[in-house]
Amino acid sequence: MRKRLLSSVAALVLACSLVPSVALAGEGDETTIPVTIEIGAGGAPAGTSGDGWTYENDVLVLETGYAFTFAGGTFDASGEDRVWNSGIIVDGTFVDESKGYGSAVRNETSGVIQGGTFTASVANAGAIEDGTFNDRVKNEGSIQRGEFTFAGPVTNGDPDPDWNAAAITGGTFAGAVTNYDTIGGGAFSSIVSNKEGGTVSSGMFLGDVTNRGVVEGGFFARPIIIGEGGTVSSCTFPVNASLAGLSLAGTGAEQPVATYEKDGEESNCLTLTADTGYTLPSSVSVRLGSADGRGTTPTMRPPAS
Image (cartoon, rainbow, N blue to C red; front, side):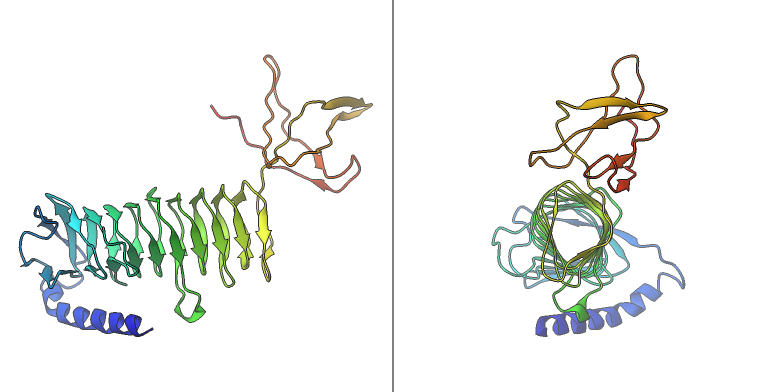
């Protein structure tokens, strides 16, 4: 709590100090000024300051109104809060060899990350729109748009709901994801833990999902593990079964009927493929349990080209 308060005060002071310089760009002019920061052999900027940035006591401060590209080398962000970004990070490579508890890169509420490779922990209160993230990410802002990749673990939101305004709406997540707020899209191949207060409305989930919040949409390749207080109102599961021994029978004037009794523990996935010279029907009716059981209409997708 204390660190967040200090962070907010620092951001406010920084924002106030920037008002004159931003105003000089012209009223209503939202165009950012491109700036390249050269990184030396030691992993630090070649200088101590430039347009929109300062580097002092091993801390790099990036101001709003500028779009920064890091060139010439890899920025060594080892430590805690080594980068404070209130502008736009366009490209660059960031590493943290210390692997400390705190976040090496802090993206403030006005900050945007549009690219770059981060093998350094990131705390995001602004927007992540692109980039590759190989270390842990703590998101209290928005993750949206690009087909960017998160290889490390991601925590979305905060256990305290009063701090929550976090959302994931895109991206590829190879590492574990813990969600306290909102997931509205993205592809998740590892474990997802949807905590109390968390909501999942869409996305593709290929790994195990534990739900103690709300699931109201999404594609789930594996069963959802429902924890205490968790609810599922809507979601999509593929159907997976070996169709050996499938029987097909005519029913007079009605359409042919195929029956299959599943007796294994296979994951849910089913693909219908027509033999050469034949086509699939335009629709399939599925009844659970028996031929006269409760009916459901599956989603029909064209075969992959």
